[in-house]
Amino acid sequence: MSVARVTEITSASKKSFDDALESGLKRATKTLKNVTAAWIASQEVVLKDNKIVEYRVRMKVTFILAK
Image (cartoon, rainbow, N blue to C red; front, top):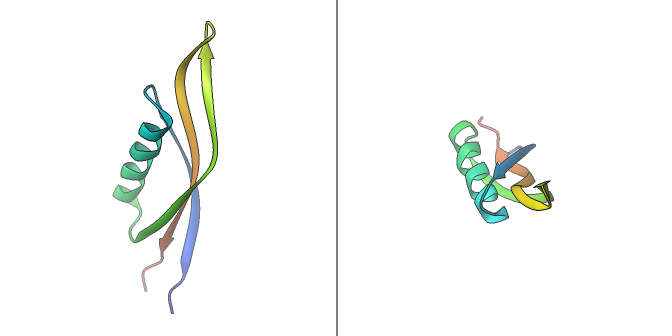
């Protein structure tokens, strides 16, 4: 039997939501071992002068705890 934990992280990108997601997962897997899943809790954009300047993704990442 395994035990999993879920943690919430936020990642940002100036390019796109996809880039924010990928960079967030890449960084999370450097610290968290046994990452098995992730889902998007929310997305938002930051505006400056009526233009999008940043994409943000809040995600929940599931990882299996070591024995």
